[in-house]
Image 1 (cartoon, rainbow, N blue to C red):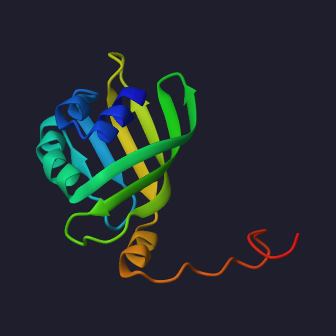
Image 2: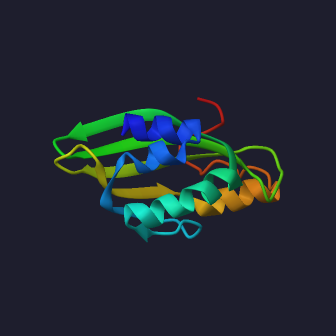
Length: 138
């Protein structure tokens, strides 16, 4: 997973694809994401993805691993080439399953596409939810 994230941060499509299995499943839960199955199909989409997500960067907040499974909480930042706006910054979580060869066989990505839309539109940050502990006097 660390090689995979480093390859994404380096914008190296061949290295990214080299971290996944032939029958890799890239599953997205966000409305803006697109699920794809197979290393070849995934690799075919990487160049366009990396070109559109300018300055893409994943920062690992936490990595949890158990046998062939892992979860990574991350902060992602990027600028959309087609939008040309200030960077978008969101938090998300990857779930990974690794095969016997140490390649990523399945990746599930969770992030808030509504937050991406809000930031791209330049909308102000929503107020804190009452009782969430965010903002206000302690």
